[in-house]
Length: 535
Image (cartoon, rainbow, N blue to C red; front, side, top):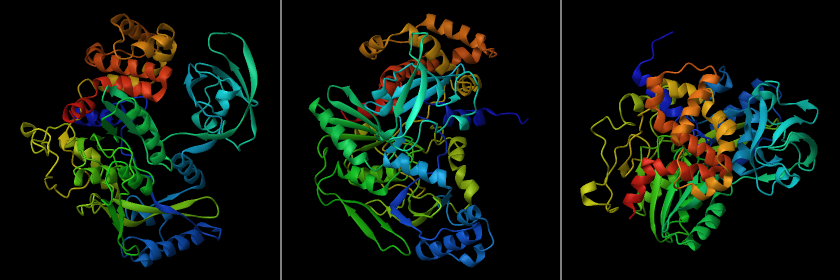
């Protein structure tokens, strides 16, 4: 086995363990549909027919000139890799999952679960969803689903995923044990449409400043944001921190509609252009819900596509400041072409440009594999950790925050932040990574802390309580009982991170995603910088 260098270790840790519960880091290839879906009426009967249909679609729609004759004898995936890194073929299951994810709804019962000690434990219930209405509660243990026993069997993930999904109106029989009681009971849950917001969390971070985190740009992002903005303004919001970190994109129109929420009338938000797509300009309507008030947008290296449209427009038009690290650099627009068998082709048909004419797309001339590992290079050369001396804020701190005029940015792809916040790798070591990969922190929260701290206590004291040293001692004992070898030096080096993560996971258990971010943001350097720079 090759020796792991410190830089490689930090690289691996940085993308897998910065935020455990609601956020994950890593190279995420973006699922951005640009203009809707076209149905291909004929069902391709075999791969050869489907390849011919795909080559025909490429000839008619691809963003650039391409010689499809040279692609005739390649497998479908290889054909698309010859184009760009974001044109992709989706098998039927993946295509449907993407649609459900971005449409913000699916048919099922509306629960989240966690396998704790081989037992399926309910860790989230969608309010007013089918499971909620049937009486399933947080902490309940699910013994069986229909005739299949799911607890105590060490079933692989693929045998659990999707068991609650099904056609609306159909029933699913659930044998469960309510939290705190030994009695098991069987209930029937009628599946229905489950609506899931693309906005993870929103709350007032101080009396004048709201915080909104958006994880993806789905069909309802614009209307969800307008509702949330109205609620926050009623609570006194005059400033806003919009968190787009790790937001990999989504619907193109959802991005333009969200940007519209912040801009006065008739401002150019973005324009698109491709070989078969004439230039199309997208302007603001002047009907946005937060046109006044200071605005900071948080981005990082996994902020991509639709998120970059919003950040680029706000930056170019001087509407707010961008805080964090250079974004991913995905400036290609896909259109989805659906086949009769349920599979789909996401094909790049245009490039998008910010109001000043910047193309956000980073280079992919070195090929698919090099593009896939471009974020690794940023870590290795010190861009993410601030070890490169060339990285400075685009706004000089000695001059304060003056968002006009804008400096010109080097065309290396992505959105450069106005205020750079380095990726903090202190305490992220190999032992901590092993705790995360083995789910030790989550297990400790569900096994121990959830019975030690009540939901009422967590909600009332979220801003001022911390996981205690006695809890940490018990955590060490918990690790030992799990037969995980302990590296004492690395354990105590990671103590602060572990305690912060345990609190955030506990808050998520009781209060959902908003609880997680309320806890995590208390020690988040990017949030702190945003608060300082929008005063």
